[in-house]
Length: 233
Ligand SMILES: [Zn+2]
Image (cartoon, rainbow, N blue to C red; front, side, top):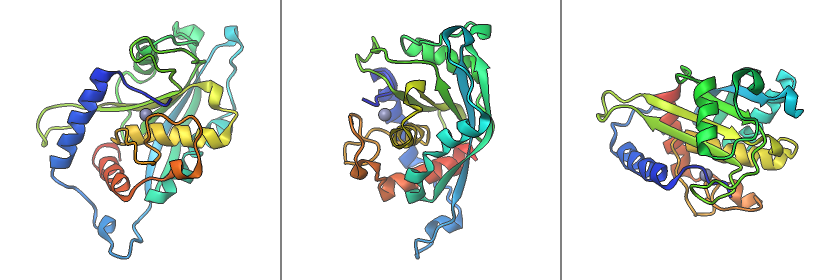
């Protein structure tokens, strides 16, 4: 399963989605091109790989980290969204006292909060964080990745990003097809998309990602582009 957030967080996510639909629409003119030839949105990522020399998890070259991250572009080209990597580097879990084998969402939150104490300006944090393979005690799901966004403030005029990001367990890094799908799904969450069992990439429970599961609907594209333009870029 690709499930990400605990039920309370999912509830919050749903509330945020409702709010999203009511927000003033801020869309650049190229988005409404009747020909469908919309401009490509470049969404920057900041990539971190959590490594642990003691546990034998060693840093990948920066180029490799970039290739992992950009595998999501195959999926997101449907929305004319292309992720770019602004920065990619390893972080030593042992030196920071972070768990290389997280056991629950609290561990994952700690990793994120330590590496990004405040949200990066104009980019989405993407972590390749340790060795997962645990059943989350809150959801009972076996987590492979996480993606989230939360906004600050209650009013549409003062909203900003409180926290945003995506994390992937390092055990998936060797399967480039699956990785592109997994990161694509989690970045979908980071761009405000909830789960949607409509056969799209945002399905909540997909053991094997077939071609149809790599689809992103036009409505999902529009919502993601609007979110990226308003809150990320
Ligand atoms: Zn999910």
